[in-house]
Length: 121
Length: 403
Image (cartoon, rainbow over all chains, first blue to last red; front, side, top):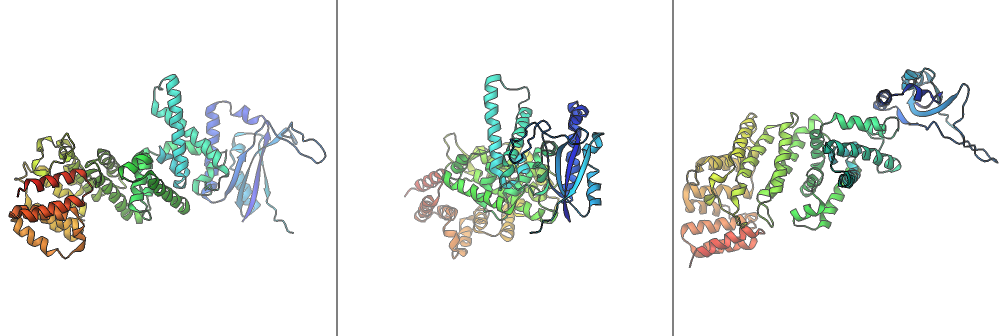
């Protein structure tokens, strides 16, 4: 069993555009509760948080931090949140990720799946 | 409300739940003072409490005392699921279920009876620490320590409110029933201070009803307890004069008994007779029923009551059961027979510590015309009792003996 990190990526304004009404918003959040609730019942959920879409800094050595993030990569894609879970393989992690409500509701969303690296001294 | 929040936070965080409720009530007072009460105060309180719960959980996110790894509570740790989880916990459960679950947590077998009762009063009946201290005639400090230790225990053992698993339900339910019984007795025969405490009687009745109305916990013992409590409660008003003095059974105004409660008790007794087990609650209820249906003290069916007490002494032996049985012997066979029965128990040390033993001795000797021995009995009993009203009755009896 390894830990996998999901990075939820998508165009920064897509959620706002899709979830315009309170009803749609609520329905979307209910899907998160159902998806994560199932992961939690299987003992696979480690942690997850959404990230604010209108702020973010980048820090570099010898330079003032850039504070006008979040930073767009590729076609207007930002990281909107993360989830850490336990899975046996990339295949299992990917099949979990396919259930993510963002993929269901946002046509341009994608989930980047990365495995936690075991570091050696 | 504390019960719902405790389900959310875990029993380990009883204080957090209590704080959230406190904050909600404060906010209600301030808002309502300014704008007047809302159209639906209960809904208003619940929605504020729900938001408070979310605030509290956010504040506790990095606290080690809050165990987010426990069950569904991991979903409270994520902003993706926090609000939806609180919302669904709030709407899917009925308040009754939460109170029931909390009752089982409060009556956890590892806690002492005093702690159990203090917890029940605090979390389910909304008593303040000061009120509990006053009720048990002890200091606020003692009650705080008792509650603190119980909460530490919840935290350490990660106790969550809820019905115990099926295998343990019957036994754990027995403890909950016993705790309600003690609460009721504390109200009905208050060992200290005021002789009748209506607030305990009322709370014990409503907690008992909660058990009786739920299919998981309605059990012949619960019905018997409800019957017993209804029969006693029906008579509690007649046990005191306007001045607060005790009125003994022969002198009570039977027309003033609460006949609606007696009928309710009879219906419970009926439902409680369906099981096969005969418990002490059944017998005590049956005895109380005999008293309730007798038209006068003289018309009481003492023979039947004696039979019930003999049975009670077999299944639940103890000095109080024996003494009560002998009181009935005095009615059925006279003071001489009662004295012989009492003498046969005289070797038992535990009897001599009881007020009732000496009062009964006084009563028997008064019946036999031994004024000096009777006075000695009454005086010893008056010296032992911690109830002012009882002492007054005993002294009056001693005074009326003449010389």
